[in-house]
Length: 168
Image (cartoon, rainbow, N blue to C red; front, side):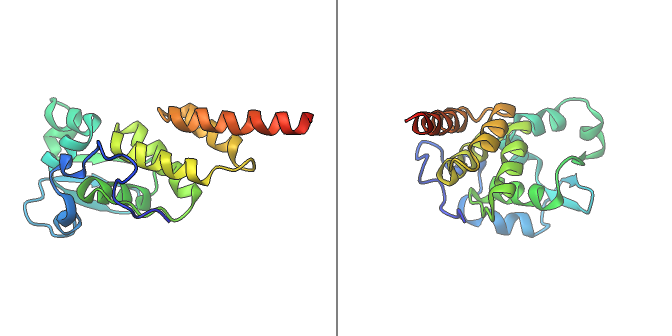
């Protein structure tokens, strides 16, 4: 389980999002929330400013004259509620709890789709640490769908090295 701030990427600072250590409290308390993220299961109250700092996709939905900006609501139907909540907790606090590889892969896809670069890098490093010959092909396929170039490179190297070992 990964729960370690951003030690792997010291150049990336969670205070970029404007919340840091107390961010989870800000998300949990409904004070000054001005936007809703709606999943298949529930609606989550959030702050536009924090979403805009974390994601250009959310920023476009908030500042451009789109339906989402008029109604202060953004629907996310293609990810489980748990993935959305965990990504939002990361946006607010800079910390993430990854329970397993399946969750990590979904978070990677979410981070890529919504252009949350810091989350993408954190999850990518988690997956690289979990990489084995048994999951290398699956991880390479996920990396191919996203901007996780390090994961793709390392996965391909594991597959290549295994092929060399089989030929010896």
